Image: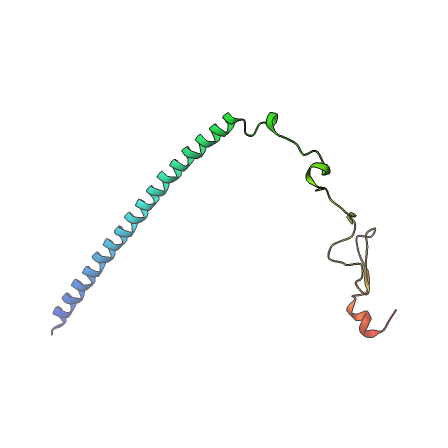
Length: 124
């Protein structure tokens, strides 16, 4: 086999591979475009449907203040209001029984030790 024939064979094989690759790229691109087009059509149809439903709901009086019934209190709904005390000044990450560290709301930070070192070095 001569070098010329080997070169011609490699050239034909690479040309065929290139043509097949270009065809595959075109095929994938057209499939994606087709799916994109179908998705756009379905989204437009969904928008029309939801707009029609919203118009019908407004026609029935939805989203208007005149037909809204407000809650009257715990007698009607069984006591849904908040119960207990409000600890607004105490942070949720510092329980009151944490050893060593305490939170001072007036200074804006912690005062005292690290907590774990107090137990291992001695008691206060």
